[in-house]
Length: 175
Image (cartoon, rainbow, N blue to C red):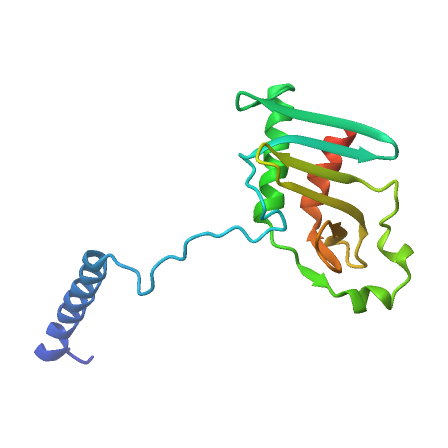
């Protein structure tokens, strides 16, 4: 049976002490190597913020729903008002997966995008006169996005599926 030398018996406590000092140093340092990046909305609705919106119109299959804001409150039930605010934030914050150019769009039959006159159209107005209009079409082949036509934008955007789903839920009046 081998007996540990006095040097090896002292090495373990020294290594543990060094590790403890290293951890304490990291904890006291407390800063990140790179500063946090400030959030910037990357969605399609850039002309106005959700708080500036005072009217929302949804049109689908000839059915229309209006929401109006009076004194900072939507003229609907609180749960529906929260849905309107959430859907507006999605339009402002959710970056499109891609924007297809007009040349790309022209190569595929228009029916593939399902952007028909009966498709869901959303129009958002601000008291200052700014207007944002988007029409949602069908899903992409992967089902992860929906085709969308945005007024003033050349080409067709691929918006995340959850953005279009939030607006469809409002248009159909399902809580």
